[in-house]
Amino acid sequence: MEDIIIIGAGVSSIFFAHKLVQENKNLSIRIIDKGKPLKERICGLDEGLSCTCSEGCNRYIGYAGLGKSEGKFNYTNDFGGDLGRKIGGGETLELMKEVDRILQKHGAESVGLYSTKNKSLAAKAEKHGLEVLSAEVRHLGTKVAIEVFQKLYETLQEHIHFTFETNVTSLQPEAQSFFIETDKGNFHSKQLIIGTGKSGGNWINKQMDDLGLNTGETRLDLGLRIEMREDQLNAILKDTFETKLRCRGKGYEATTYCMNPRGRIIRKYQNGLVMPDGQNKNEEKTESGNLNFTLFVPRYFPSYDQAMQTAHRIIGGINQGDGRIINQRLGDFYANRPSTELSSNLIRPSLEAEAGNLAVEIPDLYLRSVLEFMGKLENLIECPIHPDTLLYGMDAKFYEPQIYTTENFETQIKDLYLIGDCSGITHSLSQAAASGLYVADKILQKHKGLC
Ligand SMILES: Cc1cc2nc3c(=O)[nH]c(=O)nc-3n(C[C@H](O)[C@H](O)[C@H](O)COP(=O)(O)OP(=O)(O)OC[C@H]3O[C@@H](n4cnc5c(N)ncnc54)[C@H](O)[C@@H]3O)c2cc1C
Image (cartoon, rainbow, N blue to C red; front, side):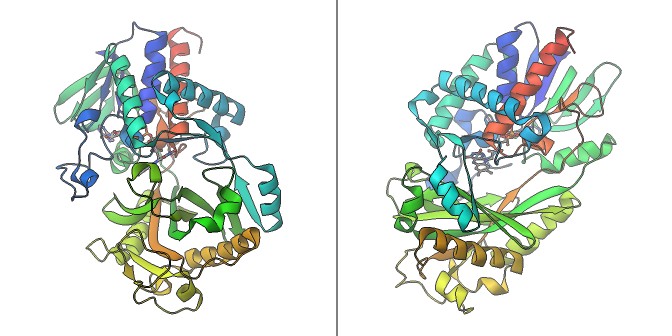
């Protein structure tokens, strides 16, 4: 019998476990993950080949979870989840400072912290109907993120049992403990923490159903990825690497996401769908000279299934079963005519896609948001956006359905907690990590008999 079992070795679980072992070395703790240790998380896609993973892609599952990706820690309450709304904005920012101290202690100090705050830009943007969101950012990039998470692993390994390549199939509460069933044997634990992120979405829904715990509405962000001349945004990017802009229109609120100056567009494989995603210039040997970002529009669905059905209908429709992605020139999009071929386009597409007509494949809401956003952006930069700008269909950001938890992230079942993205509260590295620290603190207090 363990004191604590954590399902999932992702970002939230790592910070949760780190806090526990720093403050109480007497607890017996086990972390179970269906993926591999970090050093073994290798996929053909990393070398430009096709995915070679047998069960679940190594890029997304295993030790460090999705923390193995871009490693961009945004310290803010403006985006990345609703942690501030749940536990208070001030406390969230304090926890993020702690997250950053832990990262630095494990090698992240080699990457500078920068701020995207710019008062004069914010005032100017407001005049044109745009809001500038800001954050303190430590952008590790994949290479440093891997080094930092590996160092954290070496620290944790001294105190924690890791069980990899083990799929937790079900869990059952018993009198004073939990019975945890996996495909490699069973475990018992007094307290149970679930940190299964987005990759455990279907699994957690089933568990919650079986345990009679209610799941609520599910958010789904869809949007076009935009590739434009980088110098067009010089005026707003001159002081920061990335600016996040929000545009509100009738029935929507659209926000720019993952802005990559001199970056490329790559393929993202998730939930059986293929989407255009941004890759930072730091990850590439050659720079594209283009800038790309997605303009996401969030929508809320009554259930997880309905959100996924919508994603599959729209993106699956574009993919046509063979990973097809479409793109269109902005000039053609405005003129409501399909793009045919882009060989003489000034802006060279950094991702191979099929030139087409977004208007016949993408719902009006997302097209309207791009039209209105581009208009406001032109006013802000005081220059027309080049008609050879490219729009790619279509990117998505998936969220877990919200499951009811107390302010300590405890479910209606005593001693069963949800941390990170599977709670439906966090949607980013910094917030997932902060939620882990927060719940660890509550559990430590419980062990001391303080709450
Ligand atoms: C491609 C991509 C890039 C991203 N880049 C950024 C970024 O740069 N900045 C940012 O702020 N956010 C980013 N995000 C979001 C961010 O990575 C997540 O919000 C964060 O990692 C969530 O942490 P987590 O601990 O909740 O889950 P995860 O990090 O996803 O970890 C969940 C773990 O649970 C395991 N698991 C799931 N089910 C089971 C099961 N049944 N049994 C055993 N193990 C299980 C998985 O193997 C996985 O290791 C990105 C997301 C994606 C998809």
